[in-house]
Length: 470
Image (cartoon, rainbow, N blue to C red; front, side, top):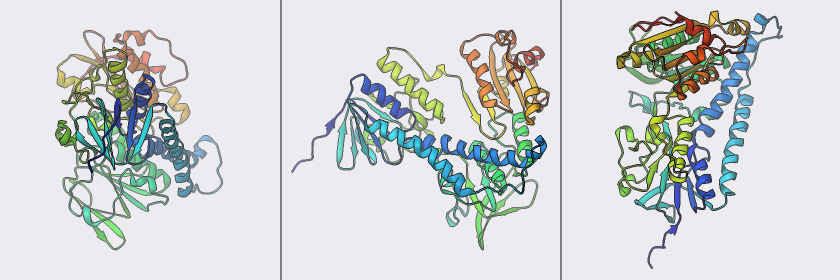
């Protein structure tokens, strides 16, 4: 008895993260028969272990933090603030679950779309196997996302550890959380659990936190976290983990401080890796680059005609918004005869500690490395009335512009609403307008955004060394 004939579709989408469902909707609306495959929970990282659940937890942590600060605002709160972690988790689960169910129901009721649940593996450049089913299509879109890296450090296999995914199951308060990794994911969880009531120590191998950012941003972030009682251990060149009774010991070869940190739990937050190792990409001839990321061009096409890579697995973004933009780029080129490219977008993202960091464009270091003469304007949040009124004066904002053309090259807003304020700068950058457009704008008082025009009155030459809020 021969193998069953494959079921034919116009398009196959592997993965239901941010890019997949929207692409399925566009393709199906264009009259195509679409198969979409999901091996786990619908919605991908953002819905299940990323943006939605973590920012829900951040909101609970902020509520606890402000409750403790109530006396500063003349508000009396009787007794100590107590955080019920089971209720915190239940709220997170409800919000995340609503999003996940929404995605699943949308796909399963979508006309001309068939959902397959299981692991997808390429059989050839045009065929994908899911369990007992073989699917065939002239267009295949890989949207498989990524997962936390488990570093190959001594002792990691002998201890229980947490990642951003398993943190979603935590409904208790760790007495002392050791966070290995002082970047975006690690710092968000670190501050969050400190505000819930845990002792927190952040261990980072580099000489500063979030080393992707400029030194003044890193220094300000470290100050914000240490002000809340988070211990920061930098220059941890050799990290080793072990058990000591019920505790976990992290040996840290740091230039300063004790040689070990003793805690109750460890969170590994040292990076992400793509979910590409079990797709059978070699059977399709799809090229994979460093770290397992699928090689994709400016329109997200792989080296194999008819196969595209979207979202975290292509190494071109690793954010929900870049994944959604990947969908927009592919749909525009395929369906709208609209030439859109990855290189058209401006890097933009946020770090959701409190206060948040909003970033757009190039860092100071990137501008200086490019050799362009540039100017910078900075203002400390202590000099922003809205921040003073809210009692949230930590951080600063800065904008870097091209000294010759006036083009805005980059910006960082670390302060109240920084993740929202950054968009007023980002939109001007997309318009390719000079900074003088913002300088002449009338913004609303009292806001953080209102200080951007007046801040631009004080542009100075960008030097290699900058100071926080200077």
